[in-house]
Image (cartoon, rainbow, N blue to C red):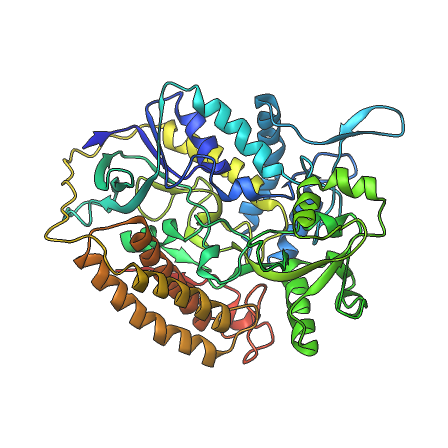
Length: 530
């Protein structure tokens, strides 16, 4: 058993920000299941939404967020995160994060703010079209030289250790975590009274996603098994524009293109968003994604197209260098021709329920970033609010966790017991089950749902859960097996939440109940394992 003052699971903007602050107060274990640089943050193209100009205001940003959230945002959370944002952005800039700048009419330099769907003003700070990578690299540079942070890469968390599981009668508390060392193939026991869950989202439960391979919902699944409250998992945001190409997978085409004037057209070259919403291509993401889905189903086409060729070629190349380069590799010149795109699973708006300090329903366990449900997003995330939430909530969790150090729970943790097991020798079965989960979620729990489709998904997921549990208890744990276990758990939580919401709201749209029902469902969906 190894003891740390803080255990941080995840190496995106939330986890790295917390680790850097907490290292001033004690020893930190920073756990990541792949390389340290592998995170959803690193894939974020668009930017950070924050009020940074005189033309904007906190009130407008709050209003836009509440409108996007379709009635389920917690206004206190929205107000707190929006108003504390500028201070956290200033910290990132002081740390060395670069955001694009431009020269105004008077020759003075200012931030080059852009606009995305659902925003009434230009308030998106960006670094070209790779903002997340810029933030990630800057934070990693600080982590690398810090003597109090022990980085444990290629380590995958298996489960939390709680006093409830150990049989204590006291309040259920998180006192540690079992972690698989992937290289050695052994499970280590880590002890701490402060564990920070910052594992990101669950995009890989779907066949098509903008997320990297690491996004298998590990944090939500672990928190569920530990007994934490999970909420609003029915609200999965599908990004409207993922590159449609046979050999380039999971590549997001940033919403910032539409913010700079790109239009959506069908295979005949006709726009269709002008008939869907007053904001046209800048409508909230759920509306744009459903419009694209409807257009594809109406025409039978496999994709639609995003056209920014009306803009000067030099502007497109300089503003979107990563997207431009990727399109060229696919044989497309976006300065001259439209980009084929389809919707893809992008962001979970629900997660582990927390308060405004990141505290979950389990003492000593905090959740920050995409894995957490703070109340900021409600039923639909406003574009580029996620990075803002990650850095603000990391700071608030740090302040709460270190404000008053409580007396540690005096407990020795049992070592992991593998029992009489053998190595996994049926990898083809695990691979098959993995693909089946992702396919059934895409077919039955996608952009448009019905109760019949959801029930079919639930039936198959129950069978898959039994199969995976048999694997888990009879074979030696591996990363593939643990990820499959988590995928099935999180997919089941999404389906169960969706079945409980008999209305259409935000990202949850069902043909059986196409209207919003505030009388019965103006509330969060809560699930908890007892």
